Amino acid sequence: MSKTYQSPFTEPIVVETKEDAVYAIMHICSYCKKDAIGQFHCPYCDSKKCRDVQKQIASDFKGKET
Image (cartoon, rainbow, N blue to C red; front, side):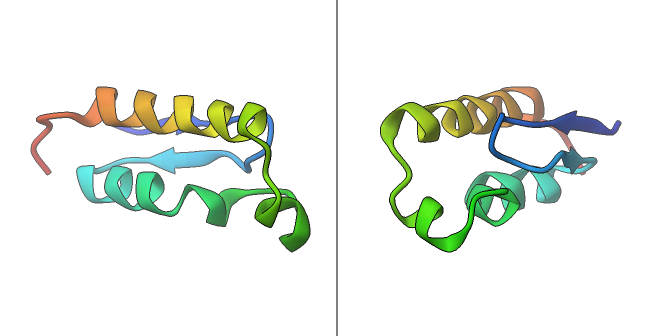
């Protein structure tokens, strides 16, 4: 099962396994399209949109076997 996720600030995140899901959740900022300064000063209104993507990934892959 392959799913693609994306916030307005990230590249598409393709998740196929539970391990991919964990990596995507823990490293969501590595998919960010902002420059380093933009990432460092990421306002809550922006980071909440990425947090919503993290929650969706966690919800979709919770309890899935690898």
